[in-house]
Length: 436
Ligand code: CMC
Image 1 (cartoon, helix red, strand yellow):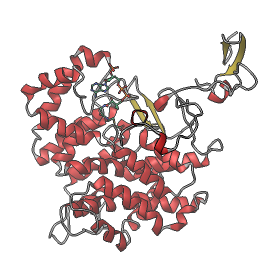
Image 2 (cartoon, protein in one colour):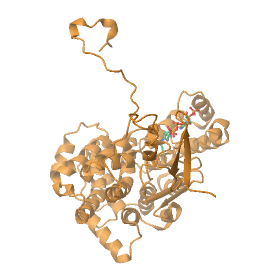
Image 3 (cartoon, helix red, strand yellow):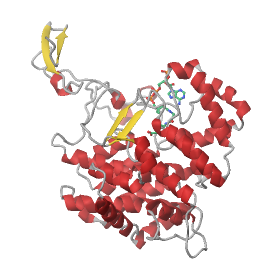
Image 4 (tube, protein in one colour):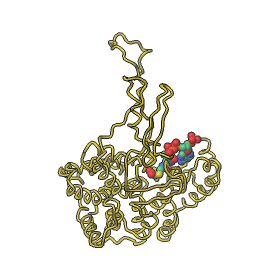
């Protein structure tokens, strides 16, 4: 009769063990009983980069990478992108349910009331070099928020978590826009509470001398959808950073700073910037085939292609591709879109990309849209961070409230020197030490 267990026979000892299988997983700790002797530490699993290890149980986001499915709290991303707003999705992500009208209104009001930042923060943004990457500024300023809100240390107080959630979702766009204004030498544009969340962000980014900034509704909606598409993506590198750093019980601003730092890397949130740079480097549709050859020769990677989880078309890339036309109708067509389409066309027919199951990911088209909307390249990961903030908070809160949570602390396989005795510096020869 079928049983939900796994029987393991240790060929070193001939002993057999029966281990429970729950939700398609075994508990790594169940391996520890497998020993060759009493003083053996016990068997561990070795999984660099966690490619086959579930680090938590989560109810936030569901992804089926083989089928190209993404759902937040059960709702398909396609429905949310078409019918919802970013703040409604933020509520859903953090609280688990779509809000009733009165709850949505209260949530939007709370976020709107918290968009302003303490004036001292503008002083240290002023201190950054004129060409400082806005992601570096965002990492630093969101970490600095923890010093303004010492009450955020009360992470097991539900009211405090709620307040920090409102503050974080509200202030990320302000920090992001101020980082941008600093880099272009423009005075900070303060939040306008008459505008929507995304409309106000565009105001803080792009307002010039006009008394009242009025966002273009098509671009405002397009950016809102892009934020929705980025709201969460289960246990990605930055969510893992958020959970791991948060598991030490640090305040949420410090944990979001760690997550933002993880997002900064070119393999994660930096890929949309790299994708646009790559398309510009390719330069024309005629050069696409030559570039693909270089990728296949291992000289470079196709930026915005491939994903650890999606082995099919990223559903977010499909939605973004549709938005592109609406945005170009307002901004004029980006010359990079034809190169991107040709790159995708050739790659999807090519044996290398087919066999490696490499498809466009969210970053392949998002950068082209951001650029057409007037955002400079180095703001792309910052836009990603604004969208991802509700997801980080949802993951952090879920981690804190999970009774199984302990401080994240992986094991290692030690491969260094065995015990050896200290040799005084004068007695060491050149050939035994590495050059400085
Ligand atoms: N171009 C060419 N070959 C690739 C690419 C690519 N973009 N991505 C993976 N491969 C190949 C890789 O060379 C390897 O080949 P082989 O097995 O022959 O050595 C194989 O595919 C597996 O690659 P991997 O690096 O082991 O895969 P991974 O799951 O560790 O990496 C990834 C996933 C997203 C880091 C990687 O696909 C990549 O570097 N893509 C380009 C950067 C990018 O677009 N990142 C954005 C990810 S989506 C946004 C987000 O969620 O953060």
